Image (cartoon, rainbow, N blue to C red; front, side):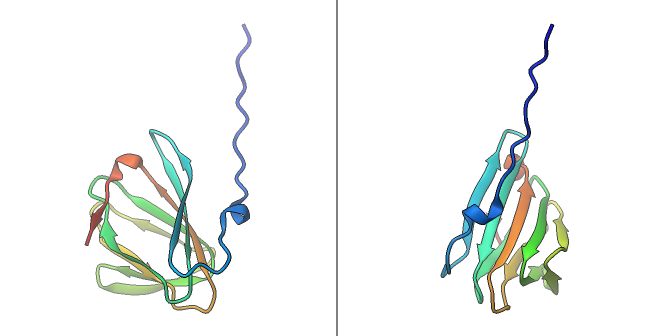
Length: 117
């Protein structure tokens, strides 16, 4: 018996980035029944409006730039290399107050749902 070996998929994040976007750009890099990997590119002064996920957590990893995490009235600056774990039903959003694009990855279950806050 021989087992089929699957090679992990390698994603080159830079090929998905847009040149000078004027609003936040959402790109789904991977989608399965268990997990989504979403790339967000937020231009200076751009934002992700406040929202919540009623049935799942959302994990952000900031790759480039800085943003203000506007989670339930607690405004905190998140820098490149830092991560945010947002709990179920926790209201969160983001504002790029920097002078360059903020790039982050979001890891979230498809079943997490979405509700504007």
